[in-house]
Image 1 (spheres, rainbow, N blue to C red):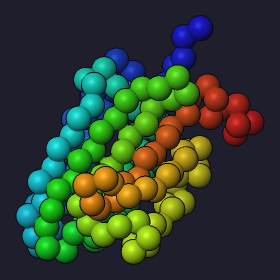
Image 2 (cartoon, helix red, strand yellow; image 1 turned 180 degrees about the vertical axis):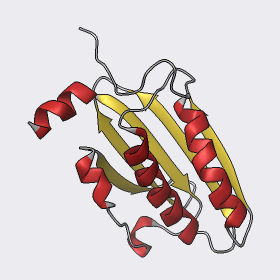
Image 3 (cartoon, helix red, strand yellow; image 1 turned 180 degrees about the horizontal axis):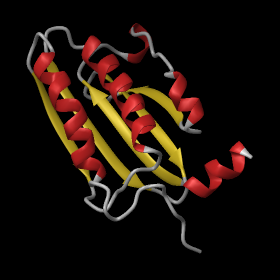
Image 4 (tube, helix red, strand yellow; image 1 turned 120 degrees about the vertical axis):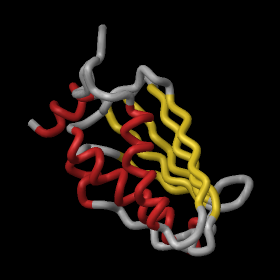
Length: 140
């Protein structure tokens, strides 16, 4: 059985969309932040573009707040059996020392957010987007 996402073949690759969102935010940040985006070029939007962008901007903003003196932000993504997972890992404070805010848009997208400490320090949030067909059934 084939699973379908909202993203179409003519949508930009998810990696390019994420870089396009993050870059201006990093430029505006008062301290230097190194960005690394690691996603397969075949990954496409797991939700409508406006909602996806709103969620990613909120999570990137949260990561930047944790790095007032600069640091590193790594955004990775992969397709799983249940959907698409995107992880934002930063070199800021440990998870128990930060406000892990759940953006309201996450619930609207049926996205699950999980925070955890990174082994090398800092924190990460993993966003699990269900396959579109599963999310659509939940909304019904």
